[in-house]
Image 1 (cartoon, rainbow, N blue to C red):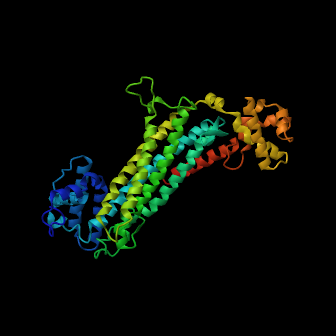
Image 2 (spheres, one colour):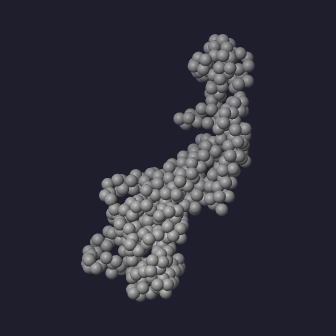
Length: 463
């Protein structure tokens, strides 16, 4: 029997098949039971339940929790959602006379909103730990290989030489922004809807702040109508997951590209590769490709859910049932991808010789322009002269360091014999010493700042 059978006694089986959510919202069982135990205590304080009734309800709910955890919960035909299933089983255990009082003043509207927030709040520490683990792997690898040079790219064409550690840290700071967004999201998710009723409030609860504190929320929702329909926290999590997924995809793409035989800058541990069913020689970066691919799914879930929200009228609408599967998918994707990438980054090995051999002197053309600027030449004129030197070297089939001095002087009279000292990769990297630059001392500062940031997180949020 459904919870609303008093008004509608018969429902077409096709309606139940289409509408029932228990197959996917059953994972909210712990949050539903936690919320119901706290609500029973609130009803006791309000005088709706006696202490004996509250204890009976709490013990019954605790037994149901054990049944779920042990996989012993038996589903009944009328279990249309997790709330119905738990209440039905509670009624079997303690009788309708007692169990029937638990829903006093409560609607499934505020109940499900509370469950979903509780569930998400319980998952956020795991996501944050995954982010921190990947950040630690990147910083550790950067610190262990400080001084190693590699080509830096724009438009996938060599641009300027970089430190390998600088490239690794570029991914760290993206993830650090993601972690900060996650922290901001937590405060807006930690708002209690319970006590909002269907839309108009609860006549039995005069103080919801105690209930909020008991359940670990920061405060109670200010408006009952908004409380039951607010899914901003779901949309924010989906946005966070989509953007974090984009960042993970960018890291995965770099790892795929730089570990390919054509680049050969990195060697991936074979534990993180898969083979081919036909070609015996293959060692494929399938996990990285799936990280890249699932970023597209995360973006799609965000777009789809925002489309669901955009046309809803005030109050609760059943469309909001569509909040759970995208949320579950997003959380599950990140909790799987982050530890995977952490292990992969920890195990990867750079190939210094290949990186060094790949450096092209054309990537030092900016050094020629800077050389002329140091001689008092305006940058735009210096840029044209450096471009002319690159063009002439290509015409003669030589590198910039092999282009004769007379050729340089034909291009611009300010070129002197000392220009060849500027055509040095280490010097080029060392000159990029502005804060945040790729010069070794600045990269060491980045590493120390990143380590300090992670230490503060570990000592505070994750302790």
